[in-house]
Structure formats: structure tokens, C-alpha cells
Image (cartoon, rainbow, N blue to C red; front, side, top):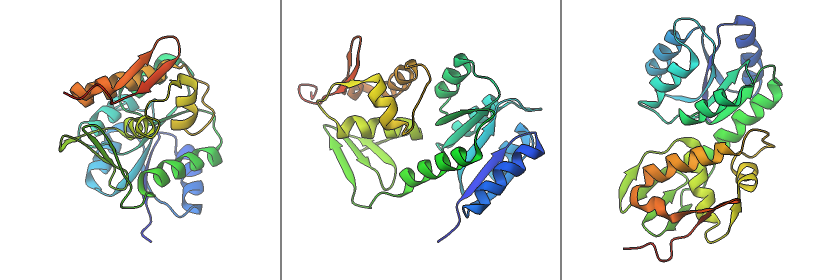
Length: 229
């Protein structure tokens, strides 16, 4: 099986080596970059990168700008590393399309576990694993979403959120349940993370964004019935 490539971006060589050592033990190929500009150059020079681990505070170009540059062209999963624990930074990261958010210091084993979980979920579905809800079709094997046959470009977490909604049609889902299920680990951040993702998902679904109903004071419910034109 071909080894998956992970781009590790951090201006601290010690941190890059730590992450690289743990990833290579799990049979990943690791590409390194020591600043934001180098990260962008190496990402676009190699079309096979499966995931990006990206530090926030870096010279030449910070992690936020690198994320913006990548998101203009790709929905590759991005894990953001930061020394800050400010929830505003976390919400900004999710607004930009960050898939996971890990504050330093962190356990390298936990980081690798999250890398494996993301890549397992993005590539581990059977080829015939198709979900349909009204005008929306989700191909989990190809990681593709179409609405009335038109392709919709979703980030990794938006895709996971939509899949979870469709799998739980008609069920009232609390924000906490969504966080625990979609993020797949004990998440201690602000539940507004869900609202941020739902807002972006609704926008990308266009008229079909109405499938996602807000349950005030609780969370959301995905419901197709009565929404078809």
C-alpha cells in the first residue's frame, strides 16, 4: 500500500523532528517546511499530500495565511497547531476551514491518533457507500457531494457534518452530541464551533441548506420532508 504523505509545517526544528519521528513510525511519508512561504511552495509542488499539520506562529507567512492559500485550491485536511488557547483563534481556524485544532504542548501520540482518524475516515469507506437525502447525494468513498447532479466543494469537517446529519435524519441533535460524534473525541471548546460550521454548510448547500433546521436552545435537525419544491 502506498505510504500517505503528511506536510508538517513549524519553524521549530525540534518540533518538526518530534512530529516526524512519530509519524514515520506509523509508516507515513513526512515532508517538512520551516516557514509559511516554504509550506505553500512545497504543498503545491507535491500534488499527493494527504494531510497538513500547520503551526500558527511562523516567519514570512503565518499559519492563517497558509491555510487561506491552500483552501483557495484544495480541501485537504488541515490540523492546526498553536501555542495559544484563545477561543477566538480556534473559531478563526474553523472559519478558514481548519479540520482539527490542537494547542501546544500536546501529546505526539494524540496528534498521530487524530491524523490516523482523519485519514481513515476520508479513505476507508467502501466504494458503494452512497447516501441520499432529497436532492443531495453523498459519495463517502470518493468524498464527493452533489446537489441535483451539481458538485459541491466541502471541507473535510463540512463533509463529515453533512454525512452525520443525513445519517440521523429527523432526529434532534444537541450541539454536544454533534461535537462528540463528528469530531470523534472529547471536545472542550465552545459549542459555537458547530454554529460556525452549520452556517458555512448551509451557505454551500444553497436552497437545500433549509434541510438543516435550527432547534433553538438545543442544536439542529436535518429534515428533507416538506422542503422539496
